[in-house]
Image 1 (cartoon, rainbow, N blue to C red):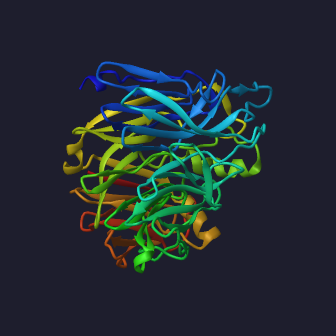
Image 2: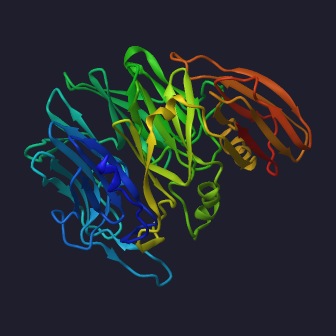
Length: 494
């Protein structure tokens, strides 16, 4: 396809912000491929015979930076609605002991692109014009087909957070729910919103909006245990998507799945839980073939140069690379690894028989770690959609046992892992123990309704231990009977 020939790599270029953004909002609609390149704030509209780049001049003056970092995009009729945030103009404040930017010109925004007439309209923008704080970013746009309006999720920010309705013709915004929400999805005739604070405790509730009656309901998420019987910590959310008349919330450490409106509570299934920042953050779930394609990222947000004692303690959690970024395909009861990639995946879209994968070599960073340019190398991979039916790639994980040991001390939980075994013929865990111990292996799958895990125990001797996982199926998680702050573990899947 001629559209694909117009794709290329994006090296670091001017765009003041924290570390690196990425390629966000990938959407192919009405023969137009859209995405926003962050942090350069350049929205791309690519056709077979043309390419248009919009630099957010309708929001404010140049030079702009930002654009979108959560894949806020929706399509209705001939329109592509894209949202997020942008500095217009960007204000970089140097490097005299610290590197930062002013947020006085940071705007949240929603635009409409008319694919029939190649026209861009600024539908709505908002700023609180504060040097360090900002209005809630637009992190999701959901079309309400009953009331013909756009629903906006806003969680990342300091003011005007919550769930809003936006008139897609007049651009008037109305607050519906003041609870901060990053993402939402339609399940039957309701919208399920994940509610919480991502850079604090994570998702804590599901709020549902009945599109017909306007009724809201609230469902707190259980924080006691998952299907393997262990607890979980800081379930920061990447996306929430609908399939099987249920909501699937992809979070750090696992997946919440269920439908509390039908009496099936949102159950936690542990997945890639290493008590690091390995998580499905800043990427969208993609409905594909009746299932859901999603990425869990190795390095999406990180502390680059810790300054305070709190940052010193948290930096190793954000910078420990436990494994590659992985594409998974969710078709309950199966969770299957279908791709292994580098630092992070930022956006997913289907185009013909292809899957488009936005990728980046570099994470987002923190408040005093701004640079005047984006620091990542970003590109778009074009994969054959048949990867969901092929054998999974070879994958390895390696991580210190100190992290689950700390979780055991601090939160009274230390169960870790959640490794999908679907399609692998050879799987093993190698444990380098600093002392004799006992390992429990939990075996489970993503059955709906959920079922409890089966468990087996293995004696662990000081030194190197090899546990054959080939006799297990579904997913496996682990727990050491005693904490081991000097040990490490490697998991190999072939």
